Amino acid sequence: MESSGIRIVTWTVTTADAAAFSASAESAAAAPAAHTAIAGSVSHPSVVSARSGRTPLTVERFLRAKGCSHHVLTLLKRTDHGILLNGVWAYGNQPVHPGDEITIRVEEAAGSEQILPRALPLTIVYEDEDVLVADKPADMPVHPSAGNYENTLANAVMYYYSAKGIPFVFRCVTRLDRDTTGLVLLAKNSLSSAILSDQSAHRKIHREYLAITEGRLPESGTIDAPIARGEGSALMRCIDPERGERAVTHYQRLALFWRKPPASACYPDAMAPGTSEACTDSMELHSLPEVLSLARIHLETGRTHQIRVHMKSIGHPLPGDFLYNPSSVCARTPRQTLHAHRLTFAHPVTGKTLSFVSDLPADMRNLLEYDYLASPDPFP
Image (cartoon, one colour):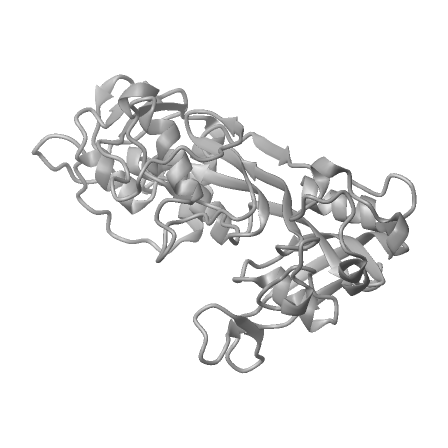
């Protein structure tokens, strides 16, 4: 099925499904039912139960409850045998009952042809028929944009599927900045995209970050400060109580790190970032902060650059952040020290909770292990 770009999903209607719809229908205001035909050329009026006087659970209402968006339903209506009820091509207004089987056929006729396939690093943490979780490296944008047409995660994913002969539409559910590493969630078809987008809108996709910040971060805290686009900038964001959208960040400090004396701060040859020397210049080491904090961060909202802006706003910017802490950018910290560490969500079809972890990347770990001293085993 995967090789042909077709996803077939079958659900069995349960007593709980019928009860949940009945409860929601009773609480909603009565409204005339629409004439909705999913298959064929004849439209049948909605069926109202003569016994109860209430509109029963129908094929379309069941599918909407499962997360099928208007767009997905439209595609299914246009697909030959796109929706089956107990193996027979179905109308949207046909009533369903516990024990009935509803099958949908989601087709991808063409992929994202405007995205060029390119052989780039791609680490796949998990993949099934509906989702893909990738571990994105630093210096890789997620989407193509001006000046970044062939160096993105989208290019890498398109190459992966084109090599298999599978039409693929790039649908990124969780995004990361170019130099933020870690877990990214992709939807592999229009159905999973609709369901995961709804989860995201209702804050049901949980992401946890690891960040290195300058200075002694408090043990824990919450930053509730609205974020807006910076004046005269298409890229930068700022705290703005008048123009900003609400943004909430929760953090917990995991460990403190104190800078080593220059003579003892040496990288092994293979680990020296941005240099071929085993030990980098002591002047650069002196430019690093005296104290760093390793923090676990959870976002209640998902504004652009939220962690970077919020950490700067409380006096603990991220080392290496060229936008919000430019003086800290050096060979030791060539990019913002931020990593998407954990990703948890409900599978869009099965409903099963999935959780994935990506360990702290080598560049962030090396900075702390070779330039700083800390309590034993501080890493999560």
